[in-house]
Length: 158
Image (cartoon, rainbow, N blue to C red; front, side, top):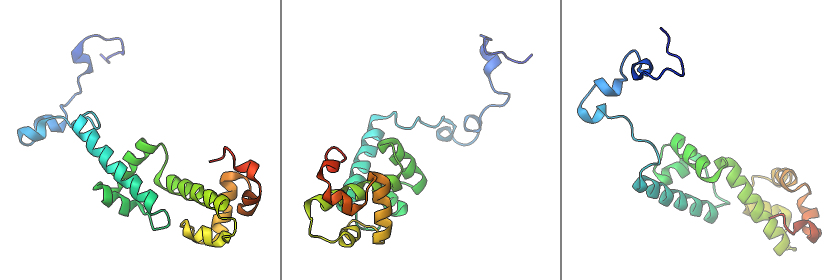
């Protein structure tokens, strides 16, 4: 008989074979894995690590902020770090860094009207002025030069 979703018998939902962690290895290995994020101490450790990473990103926006480098800073594997980062910020690492670089560049364009756009792009971590202009236009809908000269567009955008 195939168990149905409404079947109330506990044995109907038991798997055919027990999971490996239940039968193999020493007693410690037989325990089910702990749910991630449920332990207050684990949550606090993750918070400390993620705050350190976010502070490092803010302080080094112009530097190379690779996944591997930031994962090692947080003492996570790159895979786990990326999962935690997305859960923490709601965006991927690449999207977060790019958004923060563009926001910093937009502020500098407004505050430093005599700086060259190319210099601002380089100081904010963009590889070339063309890449910066393309990303800026995609994010704000105008070129960096037009952003600088149109104060009404800047209000509320950041």
